[in-house]
Length: 510
Image 1: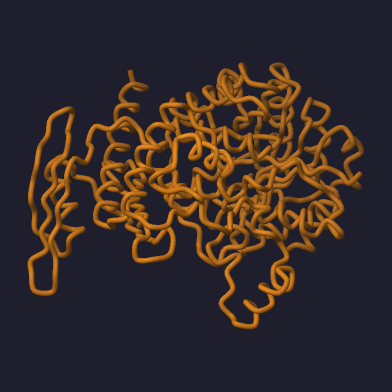
Image 2: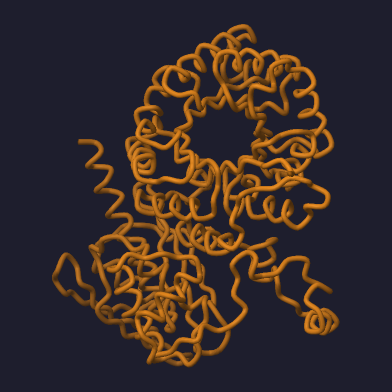
């Protein structure tokens, strides 16, 4: 049987380090549950020592999520490792992931340490982590720019100290595939006790080569790949899990390895990550982009209609994309809706289903055709919302080429209705001005994006905003057939997240 590739997902840790992609505890927990459905092997839940909030998120996931190993990151020092274990200890086969740089450039300019000091600290740290768990991973930060013989020496020593996974990162995305593959082969040949550990890679995408480098590493013997959904991560991001997994599946004849990933959950997971983080997936992105299975050319369309495989090397259904309308309308019942949601890969609590059902009825009343994307937007809007300090009661807007854009907004603020009318550059600007006055916010709008969820003039509009206040950046999301209403919902969702974040910060400070 082909060797299995262990999929280590770091969306909740490295992916969250994308600018503006922070997630709250509820969002991280829901995403962790989705990653279990996807059947990733390891979920890196966070960096517990970084903040009280990160600690609580890791602990919450470790205590309640089953079906995957839960990992936490720690630098090579006692405080980090102790904090990581405190967060992880209730988990199922928890993993402490500790790291230390090995490249001369990092040793000289960042650590101010000699190679001998790095080796000693790496061994001592792994020994300390191994007192808590036998599941210890050691990463040699900036390994691809390190002296390979030194990396071999460090890896051999930490194996003896108790490390069971060795990670060789391309931290700066500098390596080329052939070069990176040869480095992996060199490690396997020159580390005498390498058979006692799993060799892993963690590739960044600065030169657009993260997936290619990961595949090269697999071909030379690496058996764990660290990746993120949609390729999220610092700078240009990380290895995109969906691309890696579908290459392995689609080209099994050449790769001769396999993963346990349930690929039918790839697209729903991608959409969930995009909605939570506000990081939109580019239309032409491989696997999960809107155009990934779209055919504009007449020749291509003709070929696909005659035989799908003429131009499609993957079946959209294999990653969870439905090609037809959902057979539901305003007369459909709760049970039919629940079945359709389950078929899309989502499981809801009764109260969540109640909210989605009510919203579904509202949209179905005004929209002729319902698509999976419409239902998905409702799911994101209703299920991922947090406790609302501000909620929309009524919105009226007027605009035109000969009239002054005006919006009248009524909000429910801490249980009391308040209203305001404002003039703006356009109807959305007027609406945002009214909301800002009513909520007395001084936040700054950093990003605004609007897109059509499906085709037709009655399509729902989806709006994503990113707002900042006192150094805190959050994402707001809203969907509605009326684009001005969708924008108002997105803005209010973001403001509610800011309030939630501030309250959590105060609570953790106490």
